[in-house]
Length: 408
Ligand SMILES: *Cc1c(COP(=O)(O)O)cnc(C)c1O
Image 1 (cartoon, protein in one colour):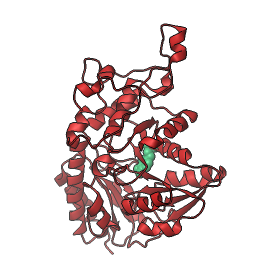
Image 2 (tube, protein in one colour; image 1 turned 90 degrees about the vertical axis):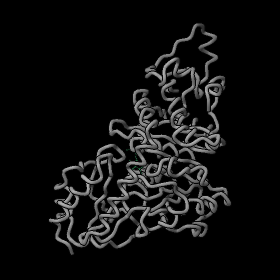
Image 3 (cartoon, protein in one colour; image 1 turned 135 degrees about the vertical axis):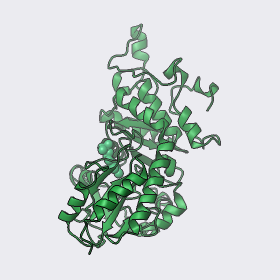
Image 4 (cartoon, helix red, strand yellow; image 1 turned 60 degrees about the horizontal axis):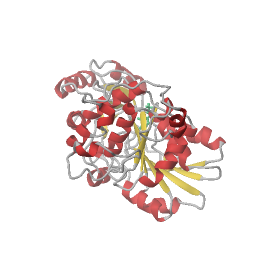
């Protein structure tokens, strides 16, 4: 996308091509930078607005609340359009993106967009807990039934599809337990039956897993995590195939969804460096995971790039890399000992979220959440979000803390 193509794009969402043969870093540098949004500067300004002014009543009446058109604040402005377009451009085959005030709002809107009363949803048993909560409460109340499936079901998903099945939700790797799913297999089976597929692609981002190109209809990101990358913003996105853009747009509007321009600006700033950050997160996390695998206090590593992770073969086949979030299962011991281990770490913060420049360690207890596929663990587990610190310092920290762990 050169200087020329930044002009005269019309008022519609742009269909993402395959990147015109350009590398990801190049695309990240130019995506969404339409000249009419940035003016003469590199980045779009923060366009804060509720009201947008027109010269005449006729112009006011003629304006439509469409993508890239000035209308009213809820329809966004150049800052959020630039981020939305950049996210579309990073997802080959996609037709448009809408932004949300959080990843959870993005998940909710995407589900409400495809489901109606009487429908059944097939939901990965490894899904993010608030996603489950939405299914078990609000969606249920509105007449949508959710059936949880084993994330490792693969093409066997075809046997679970019933008359009322309308959508299949994937999350790969899964939250807390990191099962990698056979996304192309599941999506192909769904497509054959005319069933829509949604994926929570927060772990990989389109850089490591181009979800639409791999067969998904709808790709959801908690941009709060790697896109923002600095633990200072809450924002979410939904990116869809061209034929679903209108429906996404209508549903977002009906639900009054919008993202603040300040948050869009922070996320866009984060997006520009996503590739180099992910490389560093990925390299350090893999090194630390491999080191942990050798420690007697550690029973198992749940890292998609290691063979001990369920669905590792799909990661090898389908992903372009690994990010910095993984878990390890301790060899015996109890939750109290595990919690002390976490608290004794110096370089790992204790707090929710992940994908920021600073490392985090949290308990990782899926037991009680899962209903379709419980797997026994050898001990309590710890989830690590590996930040941008030096891996050597993080290993030294983990080594010191593990030395006090009562190995089983
Ligand atoms: C954090 C997260 C979300 C929700 O994003 P928020 O911006 O925190 O609402 C959704 N899915 C996954 C996998 C997440 O980790």
